[in-house]
Length: 128
Image 1: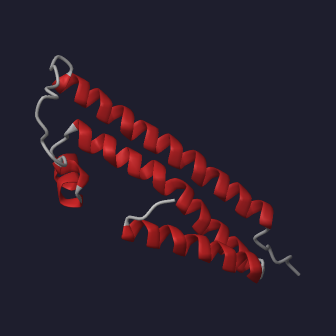
Image 2 (image 1 turned 45 degrees about the horizontal axis):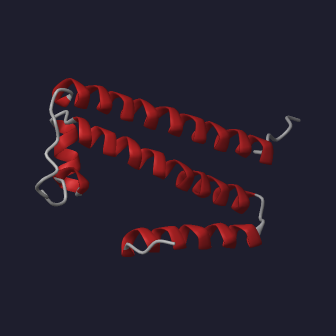
Protein backbone atom coordinates (compact mmCIF):
# COMPACT_ATOMS: atom_id res chain seq x y z
CA UNK A 1 0.00 0.00 0.00
CA UNK A 2 1.63 3.21 -1.16
CA UNK A 3 1.75 6.11 1.23
CA UNK A 4 -0.28 9.10 0.08
CA UNK A 5 1.99 12.12 -0.34
CA UNK A 6 0.54 15.31 1.10
CA UNK A 7 1.56 18.85 0.42
CA UNK A 8 2.86 20.10 3.76
CA UNK A 9 3.12 23.58 5.20
CA UNK A 10 6.90 23.45 4.91
CA UNK A 11 6.54 22.68 1.20
CA UNK A 12 4.36 25.74 0.69
CA UNK A 13 6.80 27.89 2.66
CA UNK A 14 9.59 26.68 0.36
CA UNK A 15 7.47 27.58 -2.69
CA UNK A 16 6.75 31.03 -1.25
CA UNK A 17 10.46 31.53 -0.58
CA UNK A 18 11.30 30.62 -4.18
CA UNK A 19 8.58 32.94 -5.49
CA UNK A 20 10.09 35.83 -3.54
CA UNK A 21 13.65 35.04 -4.62
CA UNK A 22 12.78 34.59 -8.27
CA UNK A 23 10.57 37.68 -8.27
CA UNK A 24 13.33 39.88 -6.88
CA UNK A 25 16.01 38.41 -9.15
CA UNK A 26 13.86 38.83 -12.27
CA UNK A 27 12.77 42.36 -11.39
CA UNK A 28 16.31 43.49 -10.59
CA UNK A 29 17.52 41.95 -13.85
CA UNK A 30 14.82 43.74 -15.84
CA UNK A 31 15.63 47.07 -14.16
CA UNK A 32 19.34 46.52 -14.83
CA UNK A 33 18.76 45.78 -18.53
CA UNK A 34 16.50 48.83 -18.81
CA UNK A 35 19.11 50.97 -17.07
CA UNK A 36 21.86 49.81 -19.42
CA UNK A 37 19.68 50.58 -22.44
CA UNK A 38 18.71 53.97 -21.03
CA UNK A 39 22.29 54.97 -20.23
CA UNK A 40 23.49 53.75 -23.64
CA UNK A 41 20.92 55.90 -25.45
CA UNK A 42 20.69 58.92 -23.13
CA UNK A 43 23.84 58.86 -21.01
CA UNK A 44 25.34 62.01 -22.51
CA UNK A 45 22.18 64.14 -22.43
CA UNK A 46 21.72 66.94 -19.94
CA UNK A 47 18.12 67.16 -18.69
CA UNK A 48 16.27 70.44 -19.16
CA UNK A 49 14.28 71.14 -16.01
CA UNK A 50 13.17 74.61 -17.11
CA UNK A 51 10.00 73.24 -18.73
CA UNK A 52 7.45 70.74 -17.49
CA UNK A 53 6.62 68.00 -19.99
CA UNK A 54 3.75 66.35 -18.12
CA UNK A 55 3.27 62.69 -17.36
CA UNK A 56 5.64 60.49 -19.38
CA UNK A 57 4.07 58.12 -21.86
CA UNK A 58 5.58 55.01 -20.22
CA UNK A 59 3.48 55.51 -17.08
CA UNK A 60 0.30 54.47 -18.90
CA UNK A 61 -0.24 50.83 -19.86
CA UNK A 62 -0.25 51.24 -23.64
CA UNK A 63 2.83 53.46 -23.49
CA UNK A 64 4.59 50.95 -21.25
CA UNK A 65 3.86 48.05 -23.60
CA UNK A 66 4.90 50.06 -26.68
CA UNK A 67 8.07 51.16 -24.90
CA UNK A 68 9.01 47.60 -24.00
CA UNK A 69 8.38 46.44 -27.57
CA UNK A 70 10.56 49.29 -28.87
CA UNK A 71 13.26 48.59 -26.22
CA UNK A 72 12.95 51.96 -24.50
CA UNK A 73 15.01 51.99 -21.30
CA UNK A 74 12.58 53.89 -19.07
CA UNK A 75 9.71 51.57 -20.00
CA UNK A 76 11.79 48.51 -19.21
CA UNK A 77 12.84 50.02 -15.88
CA UNK A 78 9.18 50.76 -15.10
CA UNK A 79 8.26 47.14 -15.93
CA UNK A 80 10.95 45.91 -13.53
CA UNK A 81 9.58 48.13 -10.77
CA UNK A 82 6.07 46.81 -11.41
CA UNK A 83 7.43 43.25 -11.14
CA UNK A 84 9.11 44.16 -7.86
CA UNK A 85 5.85 45.55 -6.48
CA UNK A 86 3.93 42.47 -7.67
CA UNK A 87 6.30 40.04 -5.94
CA UNK A 88 5.00 40.47 -2.35
CA UNK A 89 1.43 40.56 -3.66
CA UNK A 90 2.06 37.18 -5.26
CA UNK A 91 3.39 36.01 -1.90
CA UNK A 92 0.06 36.94 -0.29
CA UNK A 93 -1.76 34.94 -2.97
CA UNK A 94 0.42 31.88 -2.30
CA UNK A 95 -0.07 32.32 1.45
CA UNK A 96 -3.83 32.43 0.95
CA UNK A 97 -3.69 29.18 -1.03
CA UNK A 98 -1.58 27.67 1.75
CA UNK A 99 -4.11 28.68 4.38
CA UNK A 100 -6.97 27.24 2.31
CA UNK A 101 -5.10 23.92 1.98
CA UNK A 102 -4.51 23.90 5.74
CA UNK A 103 -8.19 24.74 6.32
CA UNK A 104 -7.13 27.72 8.44
CA UNK A 105 -10.09 29.93 7.70
CA UNK A 106 -9.15 32.81 10.00
CA UNK A 107 -5.85 33.43 8.22
CA UNK A 108 -7.50 32.77 4.85
CA UNK A 109 -9.95 35.57 5.62
CA UNK A 110 -7.19 37.89 6.81
CA UNK A 111 -5.14 37.22 3.67
CA UNK A 112 -8.13 37.82 1.43
CA UNK A 113 -8.85 41.07 3.29
CA UNK A 114 -5.25 42.22 2.75
CA UNK A 115 -5.53 41.35 -0.96
CA UNK A 116 -8.82 43.24 -1.20
CA UNK A 117 -7.28 46.32 0.43
CA UNK A 118 -4.31 46.22 -1.94
CA UNK A 119 -6.53 45.82 -5.01
CA UNK A 120 -8.96 48.58 -3.98
CA UNK A 121 -6.08 50.92 -3.12
CA UNK A 122 -4.37 50.20 -6.44
CA UNK A 123 -7.52 50.77 -8.48
CA UNK A 124 -8.71 53.85 -6.59
CA UNK A 125 -5.31 55.51 -6.33
CA UNK A 126 -5.57 56.05 -2.56
CA UNK A 127 -2.57 55.21 -0.42
CA UNK A 128 -1.76 54.99 3.26
